[in-house]
Amino acid sequence: TWPHRWPNSSSVTTCSYFLPDGKSILYASTHAWAMDCPPKPDMSKGYVWPVHPEYDIYVHDLATGKERALTTTYGYDAEATISPLGDRMVFTSTRSGDLELWTSDLDGNHLQQVTNAPGYDGGAFFSHDGKWLVFRATAFTPGKEQEEIAQYRGLLSNWLVKPTKMEIMLVRPDGTERKQVTHLGRANFAPFFFPDDRRIVFASNHHDSSREGRKFDLFACDLDGKNLERLTTYDGFD
Image 1: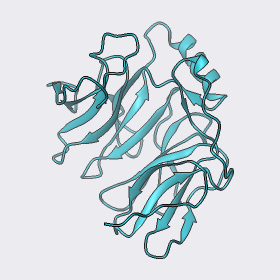
Image 2: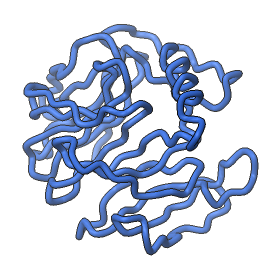
Image 3: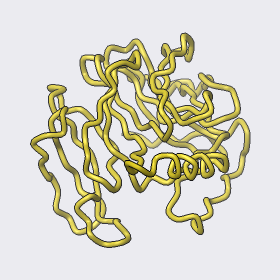
């Protein structure tokens, strides 16, 4: 193996993923809009994630170093992954005014909006057969939806999200059959399909009774959320 670093700037990069040919890397970066790192988020609003509007999605050829942009508009475009079928890319974008899932071909064309519900929808991965997307989504408290949606939109207007209440979801790549998998509370994220596409592995802090909620472990469950299994027991972050 050999180290390879790009781009040669102090911008922020995130969410790298191999293209099907194994010769190119998909990733998001802020370098087209700002060469310096964006300021860190204001934690006086609680624990928040920045969703930098300078992020665009790029493809980087590992042999030649050549780079091409797949998105070029101002606004958050990141968290891109590729279908194992090699035909579509899924990513998170604010291009509709909210954080939603979108798909495109591998050149960034033929865009299709997948989700259309208030709240953060992101971190999506295709099933191995390409028939489903698994992702994380904001979970609003029943009876308090309007209040919490207003708070969410207030944060998003400052390019921030609060990831402390998220559940695992499924949806077809065409946007149909959206289903909630987990109903655990707290922060559930980083989902991925088992090789047989019959179970999901993800990280969660729902079992951490402390106020900070920093003890994450890996869990697995069926596609309907049943047969929940704890996989790690480290007293820290997994």
